Amino acid sequence: MLTSLTPLDWKRRAVKYYPEKTAVIDGCKKFTYREFAERTDQLSVALHQAGIQKGDHVAVMLPNTHYMLESFYGISQLGATMVPLNYRLSGEDLDYIIQHSDAKMLIVDEEFAGSIEKIVPHLFLENIIIVSVDGFQSSLNGVDYEDFIKEVPSGASPPEVEIDENELLTINYTSGTTSKPKGVMLTHRANYMNAANFMYHLGVHYDDVYLHTLPMFHANGWGGVWAITAAGATHVCLRKVDPPYILERFEKENITLLCGAPTVINMLVNEPKAKVVNIPTKPRMATAGAPPAAALIHKAQELLGLNMIHVYGLTETSPFILYCEWKQEFETKSPDEQATIKARQGIELAFNGETKVIRQNGEEVEWNGKELGEIITRGNVVMEGYYKNPEKTKEALKNGWFYTGDLAVTHPDGYIEIRDRAKDMIISGGENISSTEVEGILYKHPGVREVAVIAIPDEKWGEVPKAIIVLQPDANLSEDDIIGYCRDNMAHFKAPKAVGFVDSLPKTATGKLQKYRLREMHWEGDKKVN
Image (cartoon, rainbow, N blue to C red):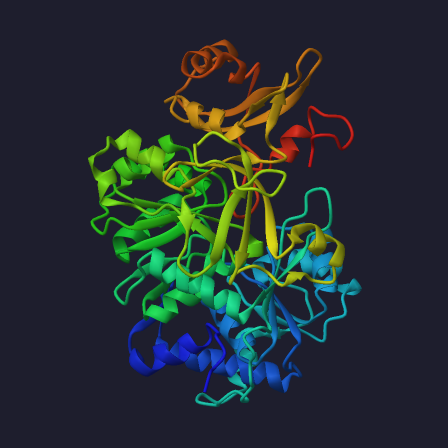
C-alpha cells in the first residue's frame, strides 16, 4: 500500500534508529532524538487540546531555536499548516500576513513580541503562545510555551491524522517590495522532495553537525529542518548571525555543514577572527539567495577552508531547483577558475523536475553561455500557488511551468548561470549590462567589502550603472579609482558611470540585497524601483 510522502515520517525514523543520538544543540541545552520527539508530541497534544485541528493555520515567529524546530514538527503532524513569519518585518506587514493567512494561533518569541503588541488589537487569534527569553518581557496576553506543553504528560501521543501528500504543510510569505507579501503554498510532497535533494546533493549523513545559520522561516530553512533529521544528524541552533560566535561554534561543536546567503559568507571572511580560527572539519557550505561573486567563493575556501556548494531556487520552488555539481575534471583548474565555476547556478537536482532557460517565444536558448533568457521550471517542488491570490498565481504559473523572473545563460555543459533578475538588468543605450557581472569584478578589488550595482537615469543612454560600495576599514578609494578599475577589467560600456560610498547596504533578514531601496533614491515614481 502506498503511503504519502511527508518529511514528518523522518522524525519517526530518527527516533526508531537514533533515540539517544544528540538531535538538537541550542546553547547549553541538548536534546536527544527521543527527547526532541517527546517535546514535539507534547506540543501537538497541547495544540490539539487548545482547538487546533487538521487544516487549521498556526503562525510562528521565532528565531533559529529548538522551539522553532519543535513547531515545524508539532504543528504539521496534526495535519495543520504552519505559517513561518519573518520576525524582522514591519508591524504593518505582520498584521497583513497573520490576517491574510487565516492563522488561528500564534507562537512568538518574547524578544520580537513588541511588533505583535502593537497590532494584536487587529488580530483574530484564539491563542498566543509566548517563548520566554531572558532579558525581555512582553505585555502580550498569552501562555508561556513551556507551561503550555508541560500540561501534557511526557509520552503522550498526538492524535492520529491521515495526511495526504498534496495537502499544505506550510504557507511561506515572500517579502513584499511594491506589493503585499504573497503566501506560497507548499505541500508535504514538495517539502519531502526538496529535503531529499538537500540530503543527497549536500551529502548529509549521520555524523554531520549542521549549523542553522540560515533563518528557518526562510523556505523552511531551505529544507534543512527536515533533511538533518532524516539522516539522524545533529541540529545546532543559532539565535542570530554573529560571525565571532559562528566561528566559535565551528571549533566547539565541530560543525560540518551550514547554509547561508553570500552576505553571510562576506561577514565571515571579513571577521578578524577568520584569520586565526582553526576549523579542522572543513565544513561544506551551501549558498544561495543571490548570485555569489567568484572572488567571494575563492576567499571563503582559501581563508576558512569552506567547501562551497552553490545552489539556486526560490520560495515558490521549496526552494532548490539547481545546484553546481562538482566534477573531478574541475580539480585540475586554477583556484580562480574553480571559483568561477562554483559561482554558476548549475544543473537540475535529482528529484525536483525540469529547469531550463527560454527565449520570449518559449524555445530554449542556445547552450553557448551567451544567449540570455528566463529560467523556468516544473516538477515536484513547485508551489501549489499563492494563497488567496489567483491573479498572481496565474502570472507565475503558465502552461505547467513556473516563471522565475531570473535572466540567465546556459553554458555548453548545460550549467545555467544567472546574469540578473529581470528587474535588476541595466539596459544602457540598448546594451544589456548585468549588475551581478559588474559586482563580481568589483568583489575582486581588495578594498571592496560589499557592493551593489543599480541602474540610474541618464539623459543620453536612458540609464547607466552606478556602484554603491562599502569599503574595507583600511581602504581609501575615490570614485575615479573604482571607475578606472572597472574600465581596466571589463568592457567600457559596462563600467559604472557613478560610484557612491556607504556604511552598509539594505538587506532582507535572509541577506538578500534590497536594490529597490537603493533605486528609490534615484528614480521618481514607480519606474525602475520594483
